[in-house]
Image (tube, rainbow, N blue to C red; front, side, top):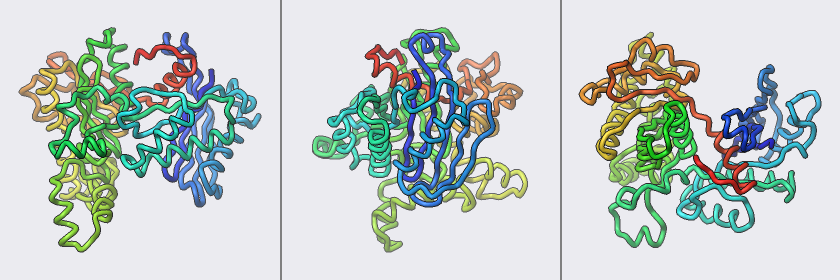
Amino acid sequence: MNILVLNCGSSSLKFQIIETDMDMINSDSDKMLAKGLIERVGSQSLISFQVVGKPSFKSAEPLRDHKIALMYAIKWITNPETEIPGIKDISDIHAIGHRCVHGAERFKKAVKIDNDVIDGIEDCIPLAPLHNPANLKGIYAARDIFGPSVPQVAIFDTAFHSTIPETTYMYAIPYQFYRRFKIRKYGFHGTSHRYIAYRYRILNNLEREQVNIISLHLGNGCSACAIKNGFSLDTSMGLTPLDGLMMGTRCGDIDPSVIEFLAHNEGITIDEVFSVLNKRSGLLGISGLTNDMRDLLEEEKEHKDRRATLAIDMFCNRIRKYIGAYMAAMNGVESICFTGGIGENSPDIRRRAIKGLEWFGIELDDELNNLAVRSKEMLISSENSRIKVYVIPTNEELLLARDTLRVVIDAKRIW
């Protein structure tokens, strides 16, 4: 079965085509056939498509909305000159899986999309006003283009974290606000953390209930997840993705009084304060230079920039704090797993994040750590380390495709 995996942002459309079936899942032999990204949807869009093993196709076209962008992508996918294996026309796309950010308490697993599901995703918009409307644009566009005969499935970032206990997901505010508005911790990056737990299990030949790890998804967005007995016990993001670790442009954990203080003293609205916390904080806000960790490390190395170093050290300090907190919450862990653009490709950040945890018996092998770049899957801890440290490249799209297949054929999901 050829699955089209769609991830729609407010002005972007990202896709992969993945060939999979139950035999391929069981043998871990699913194939990514092609991928693509359209940025700046609504203006002069930047386009980058690629068939696996072939040079990429790049272009710039005025694509005014997500439907036009998806039509453009489908035209490329089905073009005989593109030569995607097994794809000749639109009928060779057998199902569509949509990444949906927020499912609140209603959606705790992947579901086949119908009108009730769409209504449910719309009901979650107040909890994810930047993300769910964009996800819906992708769903509406795919419905219009493919029609009702091609099944569509919604897979939710929040679903993996639905096992977090009440004592952890509740905020210490009047309980009526939870009853009325469902204000609580939901967590995000769930598909990524679930994939890391799955890969860790495969690498170590474990059953699900034997997986006790801390997963660190470090990219422009960052989150930590405590995975105990194979289930999410706690995660750093909260009601929204703003909470938790310091990120590229997001502040992470912050005293709520800062919001009132800034509103009063800067003379700006609450919305403007949140724009600062979401878009102008984190690595960018502290360094005053960039939200790209690669550039900050270069600035530190070449120019000894003090604020670049401060931003990096703050970033690593927050990671270390969450590792310590989750080890306590889990009564010990077997492994710490790094993933995401930074986690997979920055030996320096991994080393600095782990430094200071020697008391727990965590020790990196410097040579292995330095080799773990360009998204290599590797064990990077030393033989003497009591807790293993891994780099495991994430593959959210693969799980999205597998979940889509299982929903379509009504098969049980193991992970």
